[in-house]
Length: 263
Image 1: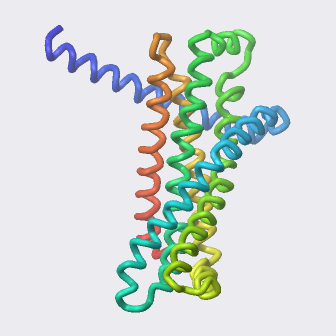
Image 2: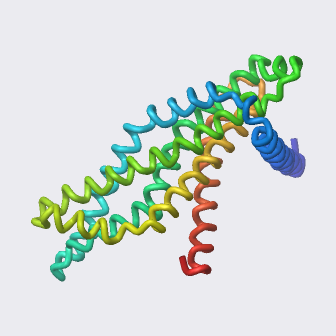
């Protein structure tokens, strides 16, 4: 096979994947609209099970990473502010950074790596076993039947995980500043003063969007699984990589929008 033939096949495969991705997005939004107009036919039990796996299962990881993130940020920033005797303002920095940016972003990466890959593996295994074809034969839409409950569960689980991650980060920062001689009352007073309703609401809104993207990309990778020996593994890898990239792009676009609008 010549180099031009290889390049042509690679370009054709890339174009086919892009077309399949847009087709899946269209099917997913059509399924969302159908769910809105037929809420009683939504598979709430499957959604609750996926929510339990995403939220309860990912809670220890989110809390651990949030705590370590708060400890690291507090140490790094306090080392510079201590020269001016204002290390108490580390609390303001932690509160704004965690609630507005780092809390939703780090938690979304954890969700994409843990739950997004699980969604891709579950749906991919069903496709390899021809269970999706069986659903279509019985007149059931696989996107409404399998994708929607998982996407809704990921979207709902993200704010819960984000809140615990942020609280753990603040607890880690409090521990560090307490070791540096900053009274806990002063620390939490600064955290309360810096934590506005808008900042917290913006972070939670971001977390919902990131959870939606992680669930959608993970399910999309599962629906596109090929019936090969390594198909499920490739789908899980694409779910993690695609989810993280989608979250990073969305976060960057939101940062630009917030800067332009002065938010």
